[in-house]
Picture: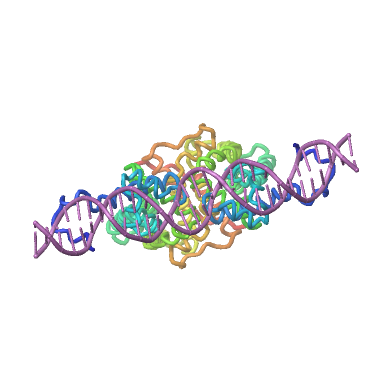
Length: 222
Length: 222
DNA sequence: TCCGGATTCATACGGCTGTTTCACTTATAC
DNA sequence: GTATAAGTGAAACAGCCGTATGAATCCGGA
């Protein structure tokens, strides 16, 4: 009934190995074909696992999707918060530059992307996918991170109205999401004439861009 | 064989009316449920049209999707280019402010969104959707617009390396796309505490943000 | 050794999918 | 007025979908 109280290891050939193989395969196929486009049969076949295993271990396809997200995004968000913690402890009350804050938000995602983590493309899709199941887990995924980083930005740019900062943070997330999930968008749009730079440079360009946007003085509104 | 050579009108009760009803319904359901999630049966039922009509008029579901996109995006991009034309003719060789250029790019999309055009959410999804059919029509949709606006930005910011401008234009498109397709992202992420402002203000905030990012001085790269 | 829960397996279920067919009606052109 | 083509309609096609079932298998603990 409870597989976690196994007192010995390497006894069962793959007790939770099956679960992980399903998660790995689902991650790849969800990222490539979307939630509706990736069938459980394709997932279980790629995982070399019986079709019924996914319902046995995850009950439903939606629950599998959620598990795929949480497995990757929990450590990623922990990384983000750890970097922010370090920035704040280093600053010792002094204001933190906006660029450092957005770098703490964005860099972990780039690191995961470079590590070949296919779930990064999935994360970007969470913003665009209309399925309620995905939208419902967005706050769970990003809620704490958004709150912490918004608070840090308020301290970093104290003369900015909080509502404006929230609005601009939305734009930051947008630039980051598009860059992560469609890095070749500009290339395909410009018929191959324009190319994005390599990752470490691209990350820094994104940081410069968003930091400048965050700190921009307000112009006269039409 | 050729319906376009009809010499009279208002004879057939709804010759291409059926086609438009299908496009309208497909637009709504594609935007709400995605390409896979919106079935042809749901579309034809919403359009009060026979199921076979979509295959008769569009051959395939993919072709219907493409038709939905092109119907909305052709006039929208024409609007963008017209605004850019007007800016350039007004400037008479003088440099155009980056904010004016991005406004010409973004404002038409906001206008369409406010006009209740459900395809705007669809356009945002084109960046995130993995389906090859969608990605294939992206250059067709955005190619000319991207080239024209990139050239205008090069003239507006002549001291910027062209590659950097292309990269930053990618970020601009990302902020715009996320704002258009997930305007309540921040709200759902922050558990309702943060809200985006109303459209005209939001548009101007987005213009200020992206214009500042475009014109940002390059910092030292790590 | 044998029990009993945990896991895997093959298979089947009802239902929905995009597409096709062909009979039918409608409206135009001669 | 009649031939002709455009368009509509109801029904069916094969195929895949997520899920459920019940038997077979595995394996640690007594």
